Length: 487
Image (cartoon, helix red, strand yellow):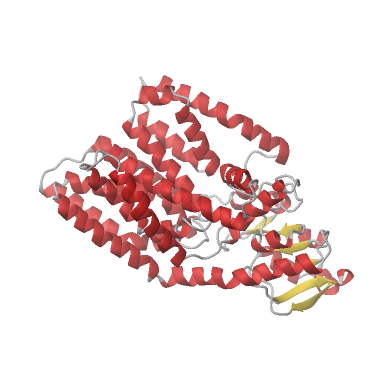
């Protein structure tokens, strides 16, 4: 096989297939529009704010940076976010191939099997078009691990580019710090400690100016989203277990094949290539443990599984090679496995129900945002839980009643750990003290009754709310509560 053939296969076959798959299962994400709120405000000269509120309600500094740089060229932000996701998907496929090669999967065309499996994975396809940063983070984790496995440690850790890549990974997702720590742990020896220290110092020098600038602007070191979500201890581990088990069930075929390969290696007395497989496997195990303990996620599918999927698929093909399977057998197994992965996603009732709910509420939220923009003055204060699409289109000052974009609720609000992860914070008394002109209940559409969230229930229980607000029906959109003085 010619040297550039695998790249051509990825660019002109696997990548387009993943995009077609992604657009087939696509559903608009409210979280994408939270990023866009900040970027639009910055481009309009209002700083990195949440429609005027100084708060760091985004998790990815680097994603905001990319959106801002290309958004300054005049590209419409929703399309730009989707485009960056697609480019990230291509990078992730190429990085997966590079990881497979670094794990000594030979010949070259067999190293195409991990990116082939990734392209047929529903979670990857979905988030490759949705406009979030998770696929870019997956590409960076995969590429940085490939470098770690394929390059001499001394030259890698003495370089400037590798600490810079690690910094970009951490700025793309805060969990990149955990991955970076695992990379250092993998290569930790007495003779490598000085190299790790040197690389760590360079990494700190890349990160420190950005962290200090964020602290000076926002007043705290970590993203506001961390304060809204964290602090539960082990209270969310049950939800995390459900998250991993539910989403892991779509990968049962992968686990079955892996178990069969381990048995086959034992039967054929083939030793496990520990130096090649164990370090990546350690990352997989610790990442799954972290996701479980912190509570998983509440979005469509298993986006937090994405960063480890290229590693899992590369381990699988390397194990098949170690078990002395014929190349045709490995290719055939990969093809069948890809079909199972495809069917497991598109036939999952849970996945389809959640994705459909995202599709159904998008137009309602967009109409609500535009209605606010067209019918209310620019100083109208809106309190809601749907913190992305409506604020993006309304461009009005907004109270995020779940606290992801509100400093008070995130830092000082109440918590209900029986609610799903990221929806556990609230403070109805605080929301009412801000005297919002409009209150929108619920988490999906616009509801006349309060949702299960803390702020919703506390507001509904307040006599002040019933005295000061009146139910109003926006035709073709839904019910909201308008402050009597604002009518």
